[in-house]
Image (cartoon, rainbow, N blue to C red; front, side, top):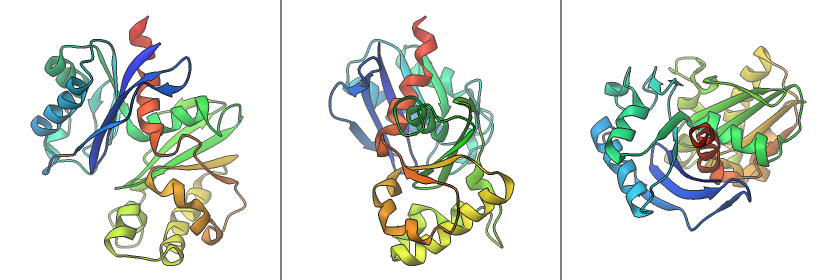
Length: 247
C-alpha cells in the first residue's frame, strides 16, 4: 500500500511516498518553502510541484494546517483568510489530476503516532500536540480520532490564542532559552489539564526532538512522551488518512 503523503506547514511543504505496510518512506523527503503570503493559488501550485517531483500517479494524502471538514477549510488558521470556505481537496485534485484526501495536519500527525508510534494500543483519551509554526492537536479516544480539536486556539490572556504565546516559532523568533519557553509551554499544558485528563500527551512537530530540554518545566501528572515518528508524523499520517481512496 503506497500513498504519497504531503505535509503542508506554515514554513514548508514536504512530501514523500510512504509504504504503509512496511511503515517506511520510499525516498528522501522533498521540501519546498511555503509561499508567502500563504494564498490558495500559490500554495496549491507548490503542492503540485511536490507531487510532480515524484512523478506520482496514485493517491495523494495531504495534511493541511487548519480545520478541515469533508475536505473543506472551515477556518484559515495561520494561512491567508481567503482559504476560508474553500473545498481544498477538490482544488488540489483538479490541479494535479489525482485522487486527493485532505485532513487537518495535527490530526494526521496524531494518526501516525496512534498507528505506528507511542500511542499504539493506548486506551482512553490521548492527545497529540504538534509544536511548530503554531500548536496543533489531535485527540483520540480508544484509538479513534475525534477530528479538529484545535487546542492551540484556546485564548490566553491578551493573546488571540495560546499558540501566539507558546509555539516553537515564538521561541525561535525571540531566541528564548528552553527554560523560559518551557515555562510558557507549561501554560498550554495547564489549560489542557483544566478541560481534560488524558492518559497520555504525545509531543510532535519540530519541538519533539528537544523534549528532554524542557520537559522538566512541564508541571503535570499526565505522562508526556516524544512522538516516535517525530517530525515525519505529518507525512505518514496524511498517507494513512488517504487509505480509503484505494478501496
